[in-house]
Length: 376
Image (cartoon, rainbow, N blue to C red; front, side, top):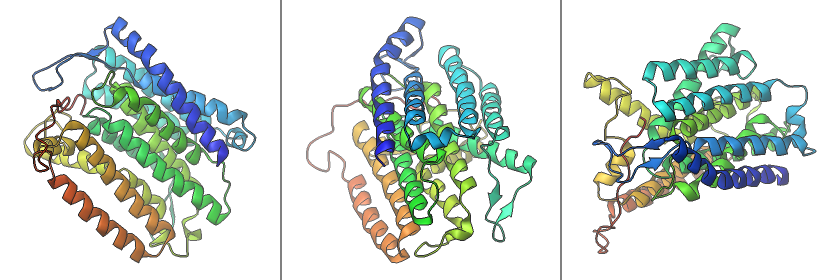
């Protein structure tokens, strides 16, 4: 655990200290999000923050390769190189988009390329919980992997609509996934130094390191460089863990043990996935492009209820933590504990959602609600 924490702090520190120079570089290169009619931020803000997070990722992995226990992740395996290859493609794609703006088909093609490169090098879904454990053939494995990566990337892309929202949600989700992967390795006697646990803990560090400059009022946006990188890494952590766990070995207090390696990733990303699904349904029903921006995302609806941007963001954090916590409880404790805890959490959060600043007698916070749907 100590070595994982060192990797977390290294990723956070490098991300934090790289963010100001990256911001200056974005301003110099003209990579600035302008104020548009459909936006509500009133000051042009530099993007490209994902480049600082990429630096944090590299430092976390570099440090891990030098640590005694963590070095096992890099020995005799091609998965780290597969991960770095996919990340390199997605970062380059993001930089180009943050500078010039790419159309949806071009971005989708780049995302497919990044996912395919990872899949062909070993980061791929190899089984599905159908009739026990259904092993996929190589081609189907690659196709499923590409789909999962695309969904993850675009889910994070869509939720990146308020200052600090995507970075915080990913940090919470990755933290829950790290706990699951680490405890699972202890419980089942698996190798504790795995790429899934390492990527998860580094993701937490990247998010925490970026947040000080990204919380409202944001000094920099992560842009597509950041949101796509975070989505890719979440997908990679999910895929590498599911590929290493024999679902039939999961037993004890776990509910639906065979499905847990599938359920937990869905739980920790529940809000981004729900937001993505609702956006696609909403836009296609209206006869619009699924990637066409609108102002009906979950976080926008919190703003419309009267919450300030900061309050809306922290409510989204809380919902993410609640759902992920429920999944963790299901994984390692009897179902009754997860049910009672989740029910209490839902009641508290629903109450807080209904208590806007004006309801509390403080008046509306004098705070811009943030930008509307910069990317998704």
